[in-house]
Length: 251
Ligand SMILES: C[S@@+](CC[C@H](N)C(=O)[O-])C[C@H]1O[C@@H](n2cnc3c(N)ncnc32)[C@H](O)[C@@H]1O
Image (tube, rainbow, N blue to C red):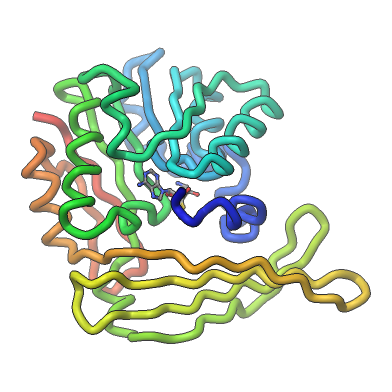
């Protein structure tokens, strides 16, 4: 359980329009996908509702998709079926991955869309990165995207209410994030996410979940990658930008 079983039911309201179609989500990684051999083996290890995994399968890649949330994995399997994609979807937390796959299995591992902060503290984060690194073949790459926690923490605890309705499956919703920022970096933080759907009669139905997270500074992430044998090859980190991407190669 990750706390994502409830958000899984309404997760499309949290995905941007640009990344909702699987092909578009995969295309956002074109700059790294072209590095892969044809028929490469890839893993999305926090697959959520599966848009990236299905998009990658559409490129002819051999795709495995894992997530700690059973409901997320179920949605990934449904999406794969809907698109006729071949994706091996399995419930597994990062720590459980080495029980599921042999070392050196994958050419590329994805951990994207603000997932790694759910690993419990420096120790949990280290264990998660260790698992991802083990599964990569030498020369393989980890592709990770992250919130810029330096920015998030600087803004402090706050309520962030979406400034427009998000329409999915013919239904509109307002998305609200409540950020609970702890005094110190290493403490457990919380994000409460609420999706308030408004129907045609004006009735509002809210699904919400309180999620735990453990932020990290960019330097800590880099050090953690190096500790598990991954060398940063590309980084878009900019402390003024909301998100960044890191591509790290297994040496
Ligand atoms: C913000 S969602 C991102 C989902 C997807 N990657 C995307 O970009 O839409 C974070 C995901 O991380 C998963 N997660 C949380 N803790 C995890 C863990 N310990 N191991 C694997 N996945 C985990 C959640 O279940 C959730 O699906």
